[in-house]
Length: 158
Image (cartoon, rainbow, N blue to C red; front, side, top):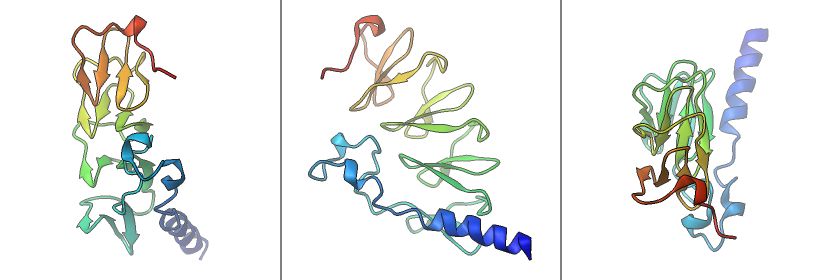
């Protein structure tokens, strides 16, 4: 009986996450002001019974018992990390986290929109704002290296 109550409580906690929780961070509904790029979007993860959905699409193989919504279209369970309902190839679910502005990371890699950013340094990676990020060696815009930009002199403007 305790197990059923625990499972029900976990499911209720996941399902009860409001879809508009990040809407208060939006200014006039424009996505470029939102740290969570899903801001204002009606598409999100949902659980029904033993199935996880992203929008109208079933998230294949996802475990409902420990499914965690991370934001920015990212989610994870014990075994896999997901972006917009699709498994992220090679991602480590154990250490996977959303960083904001479409970026995510695990112990070994950095991702943008669910795709690995080649040669990005996890240990020095910093998300700035409006899609920009940097590490020790490169500056990125929406996951792509900016040629000619220097990380040590690249900062957000107030």
